[in-house]
Length: 396
Image 1 (cartoon, one colour):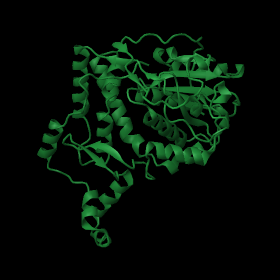
Image 2 (tube, helix red, strand yellow):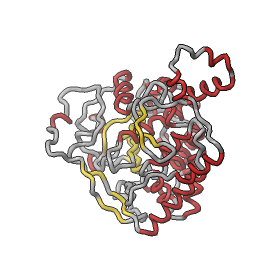
Image 3 (cartoon, one colour):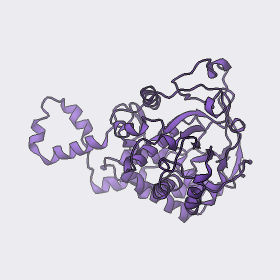
Image 4 (cartoon, one colour):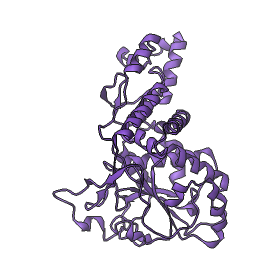
């Protein structure tokens, strides 16, 4: 479904990133590493790998100079100035995204350190996220798209990037907005899988069983590219295409105008995957040692549990930011649906009567509070997005 890369290129070292000096500092090594045999099952398994191999060094990690840090602060202040007011049901989810340590640096780096471009980029993504609401995608709404295993998250490369396998030959549904929603849901889950210090991922597109019928139309591929390049900037670490038939070369020529040079530089066609991915993390059908067999229900449940996703799409347990800048643990997050229900309660007095069996404190905790205009202005002015003193993100 989501094969959308172009411009054939032989495997080579990733070009150096000019956004800042880099070094590798984070390691997944532990004082008591697991035995290698645990990563190379003798028999096939239905369980995916949710952690990098013990010997993985996650990196490289960016270090920014004072001028770059100053610009990131300006981008942060701008994003804050256009953020949603606290009374908006989606406001806390937007604030959660803005407070992620990688968000501001990624958009600053993607703009090549041009302030106005960084502002334009992050504003565009904020507007897109308000409409798409990636944090509130209900799992059951996209579950059917997952039944064939056409998009699968499993394992990590040598830099600790989570791997997304895309198999267009397993397409099981007709073209629809739900397919794009499923893609976004998978991107969000892959971000959940990222170990500390990592912010990018690997996509492997396997054409082994793909036909012209199952390959997506160029119009769909261009929409996928827009989402990935504009709203998940600096998230694609490497894109790998395997088993590409000659008949589909024209497809790549058709979408190549939609690819920016940075994306093309990350493309690899039919490389030696064992040079990029530990054998213990690579599925056996690609030459690795991990004997994985896809079973939808088992896979789906493991993804839900590992990422802590609630039935309504929110998080079972999440650290979020209050509008006064304080962190707190929120066990039951406010979903879009519950927000609409609360608005209806304010509009209809009869609905208030129907809640007599519900404790008053529970109702009050779910009801959005609309502060006075001057209070909103004061709180927005005081609010700041938490940023480390040395912002660290990953070279992709």
